[in-house]
Image (cartoon, rainbow, N blue to C red; front, side, top):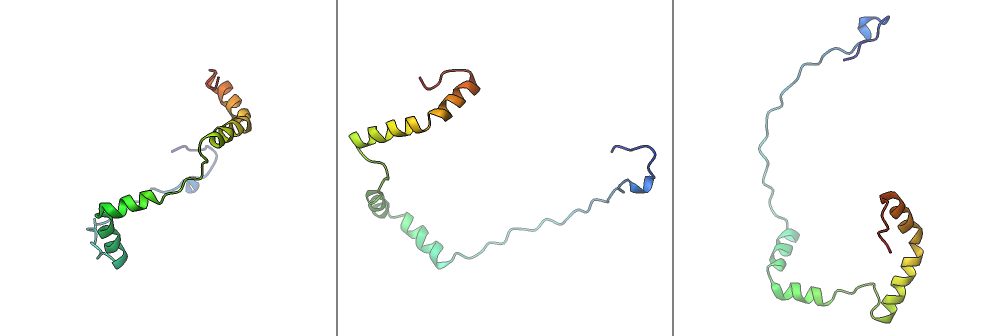
Amino acid sequence: MVSIQRLPTSIQSPHKPRVNKPAQAPVAAEQTVVAKAVAKSVRDPELIQDAHSRIQYDEPEGKHRQALDSYMGVMYQNHKDALSSLVGVDVYV
């Protein structure tokens, strides 16, 4: 602790005694109906495959994806230049 001269000692903070809290055992909670349903559905591989087949991505495919990549490259060029100057290496060449 740092003491400042010319100040009364009553300003300095007193030491607080440490109090040990008793350790409590974790209480096991019962599963809810929703938790049971989710756990049951995860075990079924057909449901998982069905869910994966219905996933839709926001990115276009083919030629349109290349166009979007080019647009995003131009849009973030300032960020790329700043990162390259920060690192000191031309990362995006």
